[in-house]
Length: 487
Image (cartoon, rainbow, N blue to C red; front, side, top):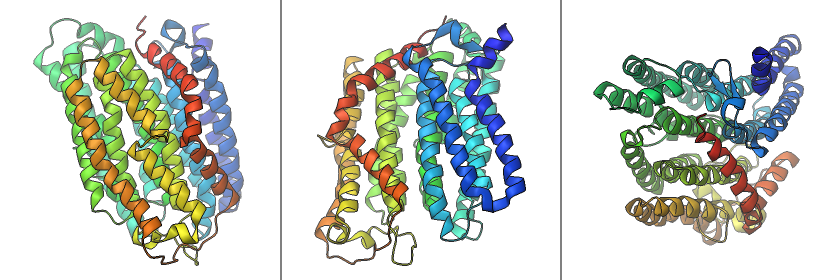
């Protein structure tokens, strides 16, 4: 009975693994000619998985009823919330990738398979309640990500991005493993429940070092400063659909993993990690804002924007309470919508030969030659800056509100001041598109899928997005409550 219940709780991971193996055989038989059909099938699989996670999220599943495999896996509302967002990111990537790779005849049948297996790893990450299952999920996602970053084998930038990501990712994995070893050695357990119980008493120096190393390893995965050095290079060098994937799905999974480890495994001693999170949050906000100012490549600018937004989300985690966790999840959902809109718009920036346009200077006067695309990009930039009435403002508002309620007034004040600095480089892009002399470089036509995705995501971050605040708040509240239910 326990075995069958565990199988049901891990249903989405089973669907992904079995579907991935079946599609792998289809790829072996059909070759690259079957890549589009496999991509469509992969999107269908992700849609099924998303549907399977909805009941747990809406019903607020938590506690013992969500636990599986002797406490190593938890399919609760928090995991369902994060999985839904990762499936959205993976699905968007699969939709936009075929048209991008078709121009260079580089689409391979392995691409959707890598996305599926990475999605399985990300699902394990956000559901892990043991250091062993945590590491398996993390590495399953990372191994697929290293290949995806270097997917364009004939492109030197893509090969360089993959190599940098692999080397620095391996270093981060080593740091994380060392932290896990220390934590196990001084607490006597690898399960989050056992670690929390061991940390409820006096905190030893060894355990403290274990916490620091685990958080340092996870900080790399979310591209938080000072472990952000790989992000601009990988975002710029990787194929744009892969950059879209990195900016959404793995980031959501890594942030979800960080929340579960901090609030569940290390939740008995928030004082051991709160100051670390505050420092990383502030450093990410400042470096993300200042680092983007001098960028002339739109993908590098979006990379620094990602670092900046991670800093704002970590303010919610620094609150160490349920309200802060719910605020962080609300921001995370809004960030996914903004990232989808931003990177789909970037994918639509192509010259008359169909080549990707990445230079911000090449976007000069875009409002005159492609007014609707310029409007969409302007809305994305203003929303990322947190300027009302766009929906991005609500994400910043809820995390600052949670920080104030948690008596972190200084953190909220510094975050608000830094968001003003960050607004500069977003407005610079808008200025180039609307006030500079038109260069008429962006002439390429977009396909129907890109236009549809851009329309939906732009509507979501527009003032109409505020209609979702109540529903989003309820779902985020269910997810956060599950995170604080330790029974």
